[in-house]
Amino acid sequence: MTSVPVGSDPVQEVGIVASGDVVKARQIIRTLAQQSRLSLVDQTKLVTAASELARNTVVYGGGGTMRACVARDGAKVGVWVQFTDQGQGIPDLELALTDGWSSGKGMGLGLSGARRLVDEFDLRSAAGEGTTVTVVKWVR
Amino acid sequence: MAGADMAQRLVQLLTDQRDAFVEQWVDTVVRSLRGRITEAELRRELTELYGAVLEALASGGLAPRAEHFAEVRSLLVELSRNRARQGFSPTETAISVFSLKEVLEPVLSGENDDIRAYLQFSRLLDDLGLFTVEEHGRTREEIISVQAEQLLELSTPVVKLWDGVVGVPLVGTLDSARTQVVMEKLLQSLIDSNSTHAIIDITGVPAVDTQVAQHLLKTVVAARMMGAECTISGIRPQIAQTIVTLGIEFGDIPTKATLSDALRHALAQRAAAGQAGGLL
Ligand SMILES: Nc1ncnc2c1ncn2[C@@H]1O[C@H](COP(=O)(O)OP(=O)(O)OP(=O)(O)O)[C@@H](O)[C@H]1O
Ligand SMILES: [Mg+2]
Image (cartoon, rainbow over all chains, first blue to last red; front, side, top):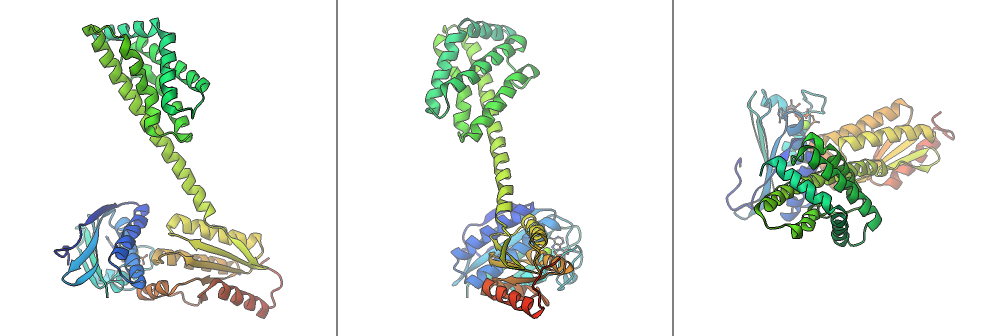
């Protein structure tokens, strides 16, 4: 799932650098979610997850890119989103995914919450190596 | 023909037929702007610009970004800013400069020297024209950022709902800057209207993420420290489900489905506490 399923729509790519880009990311994901006909609840969940991941990219990743598309895998349709940055990376993945743990002043719910809000979640990172988070939300 | 000679040739040409050229230039530009600017104003602008270009050519040749073109550039900044503010497009702005070429074209002798001089001059005008486009863009950006700020203020009206109760309906995307403005305005209006209750209505907010939640929670805590109670209303089903899945807890902060529920709640609380007065 770290690469787009074959047969998916073309991937859009945008820079996620400033906090204004978080808003842009949300709008793009909202549009894709509507295109793929996710339910209103699932649209909101996916948009919120993307908002969290985009903000982490800006705040902790020092900026990066979002790639997203309407995903098609056999009979399944959904939205595939990937955030990549070349920032400081996450030294301890388990800790970062713990509810309430934040290395900054956050609530520490963004990463763990995003995982619960989507159907597929893949986090790859290591200290000093940047971070890539890939998520998919399928239409039920 | 060397650069300096070319500049001299141009200066001579532009000086000899000064009045006629300015007149034709004004004519051409007036037509392209189709009466959306008065001819008198345009004549004043272009006469001044013409004089400045002539002077720059006479004093230092054809390098448009060099020091001796400072006066020309500052006139162009003014021209571009005015055009941008009046709603002219970048093209319509640059045409004011480019059309000087058309004026010069018919008077060329066809001699090599003249043609070379014209090409140089035309390159100069290209550069000055692009400069107006840059300035036009810069002005538009300034206008947009001022408007964005005004919108920020406008889009967060804090209204008095009842004696002792204020409300703020949040609409649209909440970014950090906006939530900050809301929080400050809400706390200030609690004092200004001497209210004990505040209702934050999020019916119009498409998504509540951890950052928005954190700002809301901080606002509520700050209001409590001032002795006021906050209720959050307008939590739609999809937002409620998302908040719960995300793991955010609003703790003991009262939340209501609708603004009217929240108002009823606030009034009941005021009655129970025997609050006829306000915060102060
Ligand atoms: N892209 C990233 N690069 C480096 N570190 C990250 C990245 N994303 C998350 N982290 C680390 O993981 C921690 C947990 O992230 P999470 O989004 O859950 O919490 P938060 O951003 O601190 O607070 P919240 O998202 O609740 O406002 C962060 O505090 C940070 O240390
Ligand atoms: Mg986060």
